[in-house]
Image (tube, rainbow, N blue to C red):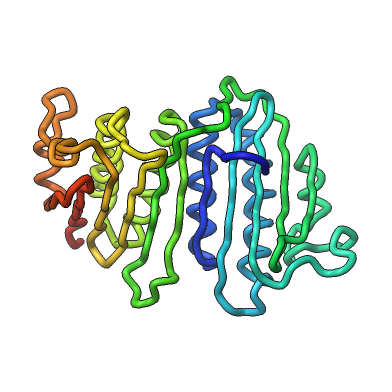
Length: 276
């Protein structure tokens, strides 16, 4: 997929991370005002391609799963990529891609499918879906990057999510966060609170980014989420969580037990999910 996609994800090929892909896809579809039946076809095909990376790309070991989503006029583009075993000879003719519904159904659900070798090793599956979506987005210039870790000792266990422009971020990030909050054992009401907080932060961040991209690092540990947001304009980080009457932030921050720390142009926030 040439240029910058509207959404870029990168994380380990664990089965639970396929849910993050689906959440990001649902968020982008919402921003596009995409038809539910069209979204169902896209989700089925993309899930199958991701499952192939989970099951087969690394011979039972862990490795990166990369997904890119773009939304030019009239279509949705998806690339699913691994850095593993690469294409097998005759893969296009294989009856099944991952032991599931396989390439024939992916072809049936997509307007176009291309399989390519990745330089240095790996497989890239590019799918294009014709849509009647009410909106489209041009290729983004500025990029927002979300880094997610699950709190394990392995520094390689991270996910990267790049989202642009702002309407896409506002739909995608809260959905991804909800899946991560559930993974951290947040109860349902605290998941909603965390989603609301992220939506407010995105509104306040708009126009205050000092680089070509925004980095949001999220560490997932039992009953808490830790976020680092930056780089922001000097002095802006410390004002992001000031209570705004229109957003009614004070009760929300109290329920989440928010702690914050400002370091230069970066805001660090810890959200407590409580215990059920």
